[in-house]
Amino acid sequence: MRFMVMVKANQDSEAGVMPTKELLTEMGRFNEELARDGLLLAAEGLQPTSKGARIEFTGEKRRVIEGPFTETKQLIAGFWLIQAESKEKAIERFSRCPFHDGEIEIRQVFEAADFGDELTPELRRAEGRLRAEVAAKQ
Image (cartoon, rainbow, N blue to C red):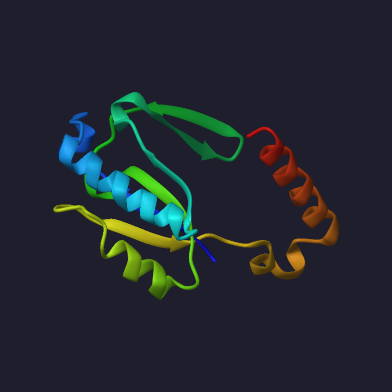
């Protein structure tokens, strides 16, 4: 199973305050452990929403909304994409994350099988081709 582990934003992350050398060191060790144990697929921090945008969809109409955005508790400051045996294993591992303040959210990623018959064999093949193409470019 794959999971996205999202780091919730806070006032510091939205203000562009960079982590301390100590936290970066601890996070480096944590990420190395995830990689060594075969869990880590990706891990990235995100720039503040002041450098971002949203696109709102209403029928055929599109509206671009430039950041910053309010309600930091609903924003994401970074993420990991991991592979774990279960949600419980992901929770167990990320309970040891070296954060001293804040919140993370763990959400399972959909797999092709989750879509049932709606994901026809033709759509499955197209998705497989797309994944192969993306992997080849990395």
